[in-house]
Length: 146
Length: 390
Image (cartoon, rainbow over the protein chains, first blue to last red):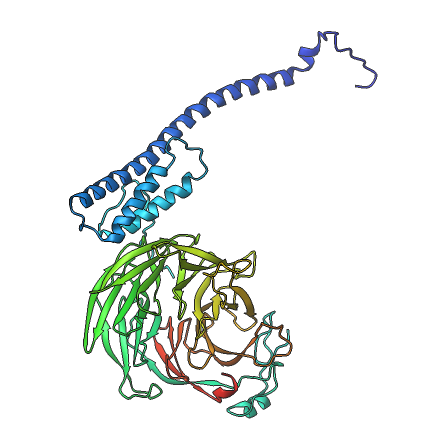
């Protein structure tokens, strides 16, 4: 405001009344922020638990399948073709290399996709009709496809 | 762009045909028209219309001898057609067999093995069936499962040792053909980000190309002698590439060139002579864009095929037309190493609606087959002097 000189050290006894709107805005913001942090952390924990569990469950499912197939080969080495056996080994390596403890590793999505694709290939090689129950399938009855 | 009358310019305007020119051009000497001296010197004569399918026909495939034509349809069946005579231009084609019960949904693509003994059919039911055709007997000998959803295309390599399929699930599968009609999944290739529409093998090398809704063409080759297949090159923007869905691909006779067709209304010809496996030279060898054939198609081009016999390119499009293109020889305006093509024939209303597939006969230079949404297959004979354009 022109003409009004204010010195920093002087406490303006009118400040709180003149700045009412600003003060309330500030207070409201701080309360909302605190609520948001709390709710966000809660939701984040829930989402993290859920997606972490889902990823773990999927990788675990594949690992279980791979262990079983490996065991079958150890019992009967002619159970599966040479190619299938090679693929099972590669599959297990992929699963071992998956960074379960490091969700922030930027490769997690690509690695999981590679594992899924390898699983599909193995199902075909072993002539197994299996489906990971948790994985969303894109199969639809849409006959309007070209 | 210089253009002759009768062909659409790049802004879609069609000039009225020059009748004086057409009279002298038919079957005679090449006529000066679009600056390249070829003109519309050829025409297509309908040999026969093959009816029988009860739904749209998606694709046709000639057996290696050219004796049998296989067709596949939305009616979930595949039909085999043979000519009562030894001449494919004789209007005596008959349906010899109907392959039913192999699929529960549309059959989208079919292809003969190089020895002509097996026929593969790819279906929206997510499987690929293999049929053994021996004499009068036809038997479903294998069903390849693995894709998540609709299989769009199937192709055998030149030696018949590998089979490739592609699907809306964005993957390309390569199958190892083993004795006793056993097929083992060799590799699942991911890379495309959308529906993969078409796969084709190089005529001599084990190199596979795929075309997708993601506008890209990908080139796949085997890495070492393991089963590792990887994408060795992607032909797409931001370099030279199609700007919409690529629907089909075809190599020329020697595999030195590839033609692609697209929803972007163009055909693109690629120089594929570089040996992609050769990493010894300075800089990695790459396939390159050679030329774009634009201004001829009004609607999506669904199919393209390069004859191994007469060197002509045929296209089938959503505007119901079949077009034939020939390479311009001694084109002084072209840059060294570049080639240009012009249209030498156009069949308007080849089908009453979309043309889904065009396929040149493997041995007879004048015969072309087409399949349409109208549920028919048509056999065409090219009339005109091929020596001027081939």
